[in-house]
Length: 548
Image (cartoon, rainbow, N blue to C red; front, side, top):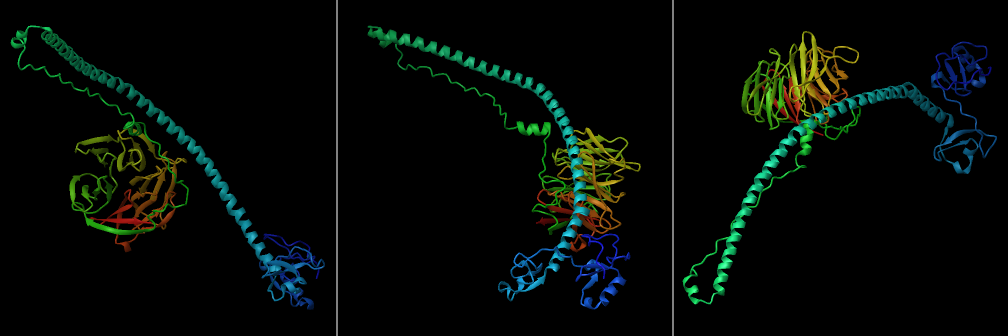
């Protein structure tokens, strides 16, 4: 048999020729005994040679790698080709017969070499085919993120400067008023003190006259003066009373920081990276335990729940009934609205109730002292869903006009700040934003029943991801977020609650019918990781406690 005409390659090729001289057929087999690659006819010929009858011929993919030639230092004429399992060292066949290795187990070094070679080959393939391309893509994303960070920081700087200028103008208005008030207080106090000073001038003059009178008696030699002129029950007038002036106090540190946070705005730094896969200790995906459930009088379904800061809830159904209740299901008040199967109400940081009227295209506000205000007129756009930010108090509103949808941001005074409608490719992001909420990182999360997706954008309005369920037919309803920034969404199709991480990766089905919630329509989570779930076809609200 002729010698191989090429060295065996280290990695697989698309086409490999037979190693027999003058044979150009495809290589299919490999002789591990003589390290020769061959086609099927050459293999048959190879095995017919008497001295080759015990050769190990295998498929080329199953071949053993040929050992690099290395001479034994103890026996220079021998090649190292054996591995001692007890000593964990390679050696030659002659070394294996020495006293040091008597009774030891040996293995063909070529087998080990082949195994390690294949491991290295596979790892190299992973590096070239996955790790390097993926790293390059992520590096590109990091650069894009850096550009976005710079843009957002510039926007924040501009906003901060504008707010600071507004605050300065406010200070310039308030300071002269406060100074004038202080001047008046000072004038009044000084006038009172001056009056007291005059009283003591008069009293001291009175005492001086008494001193002169008594001295005249003392210096007199006429005893009749003591008997006739000196009063028997002489009393000196009491010292006049004084009042200590009460000056005003100025406490620059007590409220100034809080006032600046409210007026100027506050930068919120999030320690958890948006793209980190690490989970904090408390996670909804661990377990949920039912705490209680109760019927809510005055509603026929529980389509949306808004949390009040005083352990009270606002609950709405599909007929416009909006009920405030405590955690035992006792009704506190009830309002008739035009809202239906959307998240059309929210509670502000000041505990005012905000709710939309999509027919009149207005946003209403009911204050704590029960004043009703038509707060915002939304023009041509009908407000569908609404959420009050726990970060800065902004109002996030899901809007609808014809077949178009958008998210509009208003500040606490009702000033329009931002409109989000399209992605960076000009494509429509929304159609019918049934529910809307905000994540801890400022992401705006919406459930769009017509798009059949959860659509998430960052605070600046850049599209981050859209989640369309695990199977076809995903139909999202109520949406909420937890203290870790995980996203919960009710699926009308699978009748479950899906749990996602901040980047839209599916984590688990948090609630299924087995937990006693058959038609979840609304979800919200408070700051203590208590989960409130409302259902369709019943006025039952269920409270779960979430554990790590």
